[in-house]
Image 1 (cartoon, rainbow, N blue to C red):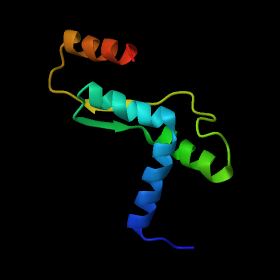
Image 2 (cartoon, helix red, strand yellow):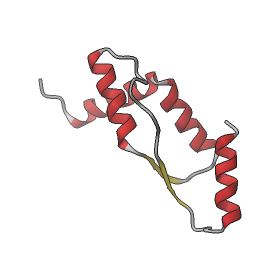
Image 3 (cartoon, rainbow, N blue to C red):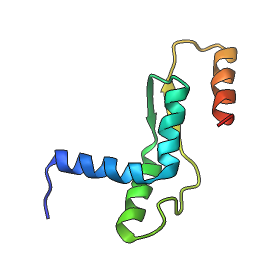
Length: 88
């Protein structure tokens, strides 16, 4: 079965929205005001795989990598982002 890219993209978004953990991560990044970031693909790929084979969506996800860019490289700024993230 072949699907066009738009259909696959919509399906991926639907699967991500089913995962409370991934939804929480996206919401947290929004609250942290991270404008330029990405979430490491490992947790997304594992979530999709879990969905396809019927496992709980969080199965075998041990961590989630968030990579972001901020022009302010000071310790205070970085520490502030870390503390806000830990408050969730």
